[in-house]
Amino acid sequence: MKYLLSILLLSAAMQGQNVAVSKFALPDAPSQQQHRFWTIENKVNVSLLAGLITADAITTQRGLNQGLREANPIMRPFVTRGVAGEAAGSALGFGAGLGVGYLLHRTHHYKAERITMRMIVAGESGFVANNIAAIR
Image (tube, rainbow, N blue to C red; front, side):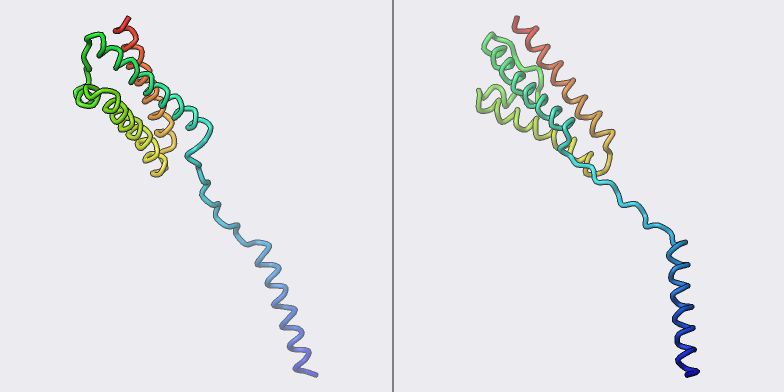
């Protein structure tokens, strides 16, 4: 009987410790919030970039047909090869812009990612505006 009473008292003491410990236990560390790459903002930015690159390709080819020349020495070998070369150069430019944004996203530079994508879209808008002004 003495052993049974001792076991019951020790069990009650252990249960009391579990309640006291769980009441004052520290919470788990917050999990790192997952940022998705394909947010609505990035979808809009990528769509704008694709449309502007298409407009740049069309206006560049029209300018070349009117006797103008490509000012960008990196793109010049592509655009002088006709529509196929222009498409390849545009695809490389689009991939580079999207790749830079995704690289910044993967390295957790979310603010830099947003700023960079907006600057790429703004720069491409400037190129399209310059082409339109040149061919008019």
